[in-house]
Image 1 (cartoon, one colour):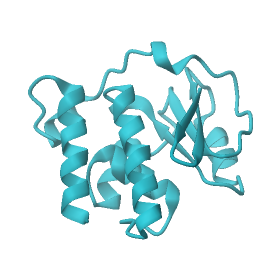
Image 2 (image 1 turned 120 degrees about the vertical axis):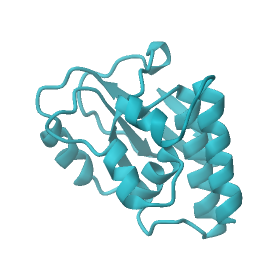
Image 3 (image 1 turned 90 degrees about the horizontal axis):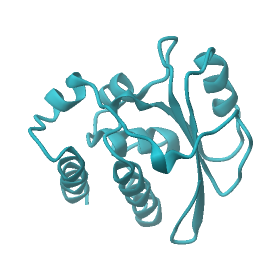
Image 4 (image 1 turned 135 degrees about the horizontal axis):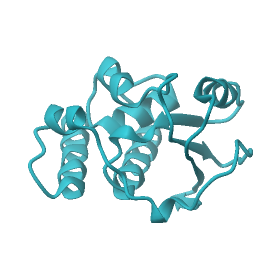
Length: 154
């Protein structure tokens, strides 16, 4: 999937039921351009990803990123927190990861058989929902948490 935000193009790949997530993670981390890989277990909706990328682009443009690294900034924005440890707890790819999303900025390199991400139904973990005290309307709630993060960091 190709997504344009401002002057940047983002290539979003959804890899499902992967057998060696660490190998894929190492490949993504070795890329020379901005790229991030994360576990989908705590993604609530596609809008969470879209708005996280928009907030990252805004932070880059205004030179006020929370993290020094673009990929970590994406994870922070996805988790709606300014704490790297929490972002990694919820989105880090490990041996137990089965489904991952890879986002690449401006340059696309094939990482595997990607599925159409716009048809995916995400099922976030109870831990993530409890961390943010989500009651209902998960997608709107996580978007509003992202806005809070944005307002508190500007």
